[in-house]
Length: 102
Image 1 (cartoon, one colour):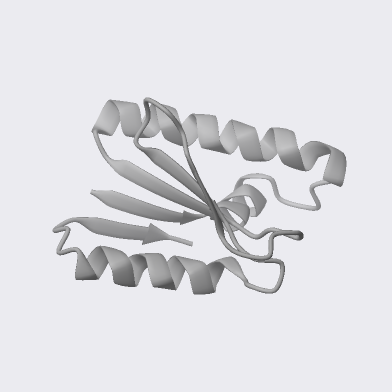
Image 2: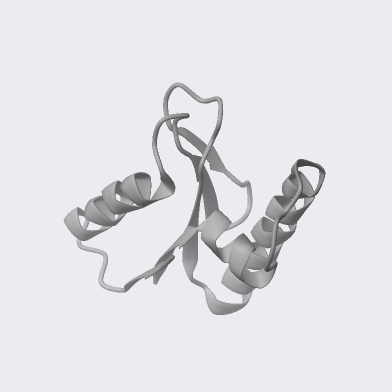
C-alpha cells in the first residue's frame, strides 16, 4: 500500500498548539523516523509532503534503504495541491492499494 501523508497536518495533530521554529526541524525529523519504522514493519510505502517556505520547485528526497519519500512543496504551493498530484500519479500507475492521510 502507498500512504500519502500531509506532514504538517499530522505534526499539528500530534503536537497540539504552536510548534516553534526551533522545534520544527526536530519534530519533522521525528515524524519521518516514525514513518520509516512503521513502513519497515508493514511493508508499505509512504510519501510525506511538507510545505516549503523557500523552494522554487517541488523537491523530492528519497531516504536510502527505506520505503519513504519526502516531498517539499514550492514556496507558493500548499501540501494539499502536491498531495493531490501524487495521488493522481498513484492512480495512473495502477497501484492497487492506496491511502491518503491528511
